[in-house]
Length: 126
Image (cartoon, rainbow, N blue to C red; front, side, top):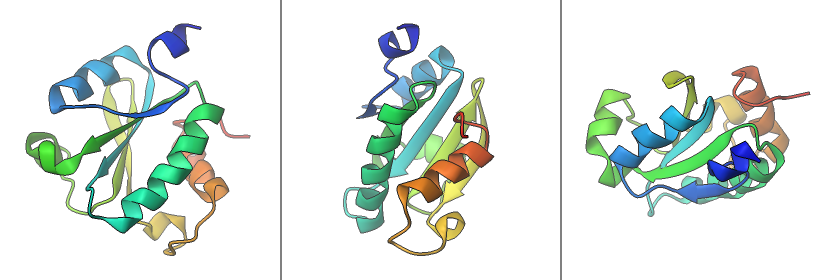
């Protein structure tokens, strides 16, 4: 219940960089997708993250428009879109940059992404 009240269980967009800091402070595990509207691969990632957010309510799933968050992209050294930042206890622990870790293909499975998030210990993966 506490997780759901903090926005877990759904994949949602946050409006600004300031919101990012507030969101990661509230939750132990956060997955944040830095995206661009015009990047096709971001839509592929959205589809998978929507499924995983419902399945893994122990983790908060967010997305942030990279073009609207230049400070954060600079600070987290995000150069490739899509990049998924994996935040644990308020600190960025790992990144999934592009689709390299996901088999370097556009048709990777949700399970592949789930395994990668589990490998980073950001979700409870069995």
